[in-house]
Length: 105
Image 1 (cartoon, rainbow, N blue to C red):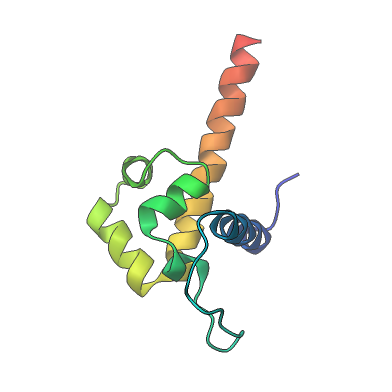
Image 2: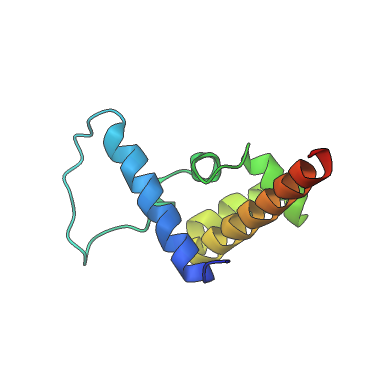
């Protein structure tokens, strides 16, 4: 069963937070909910894509037809749109992989 897109994005954000917390200790003070940045603002566009399970920002560009510069701009100025685009690419990538596994099996 497919998750609602917002649920998928929230889960993806949680995974990125877990990765960041498990990485090197950060000297950045934690922020409260009012001052918190979204995960797309805390993570660069390439790292966000990789953490989501994609190979690169270039993979998203190939899948969507948008240039990497456009994706970088969306990451900066429209983080919610960028998150939805990444989530869609992950879903398509997963469908392609499951289709390949079915054909090979």
